[in-house]
Image (cartoon, rainbow, N blue to C red):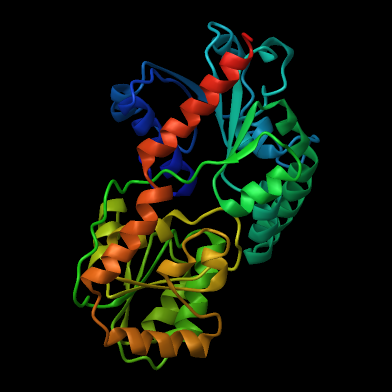
Length: 369
């Protein structure tokens, strides 16, 4: 469900829809609902027509050869609705591709947007998870996703979300091209001067983000004596206890996307750490479009083209030293201009929507030659 656009893949989908709509594209959207989500009036305004389906999450997650994220998005009604016309089909993520190679769609132009190299992403989730059941599920899912990856041969175009993914998929499928991530920022909104605190933000209920937050609290923010905010919902008890033990670190919990973005704007340093370099982290883009200094580890920006816009440190002591240095350094107009020169090239939503339409038009035209 691409609304509200609250996390990575959904953000990319929602703002892609918005950009395509602005270019005059009529969009027929197919959505699987689960976790109590309801149809959205916001999407109604952007789409020509919307079909909703129930995801089959009651299935045994360990049964069958197909990845669970693919097999639970199998609905005969979806195939029937896709066959009602001859329009191009955009599959959002490998998990939506159950019907990609179906005989009835053989003559349709099909593009798959990859949000990650999924088997590597699930492998990283396994490594970050501590609970036995989830850890085992991520391991099994990673193995199934690797076997299933060959289904992408049925796509006319594979639209990779990052340069790193583009290199990976290009080695397997020559129809791969790089189309950067779509996001909520139409222009630069950074503020000059000084911010009020150091920030780390993310969905703290996700194992990777919980691991990163704990690392920062225990290894980087300790004895810092600078105001620090950890922002995000569903923090673990372990993280909450670690934050309480540090008087200068506060937790911003039970907040929405707008609250997060406001914290990004108000921070002096946005500190972002990841232990898996798959895809592109959309919170990095938000920090660069909205925030002041951005301090990251190399895995956060590796092969993104954004390395030159961030301060980088991989060791905890180096990251702590960099925070102390940046805390006394104003964010300047020149810093903003440097960011604009990079972000306006690859991360303009309308330009990237045009890339999708151009790829589609070239393929459709070739079919008539």
